Image (cartoon, rainbow, N blue to C red; front, top):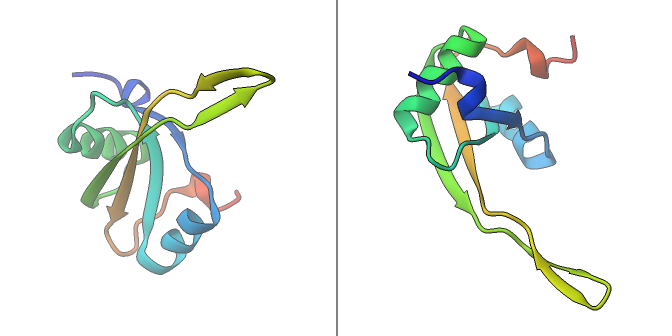
Length: 96
């Protein structure tokens, strides 16, 4: 079994994810592209000591970027939206 930090790379803090956190008790993470929903659920529960109700995943394609006259491309990545049980909170996002 992999460690939580090998599956969860970083939290995504955007306007949309902040609104989802306040209204639906959901948190968004950038995760390992090879991780499945079960691994993501277990990693979040072990890392943050919360109960996860649902995990939704999205494969995000990398954007094409221009650097001067050269074209480049950012890497593809995976996003996970985790719904927690009512009353559970991740203190990392509370500004403590």
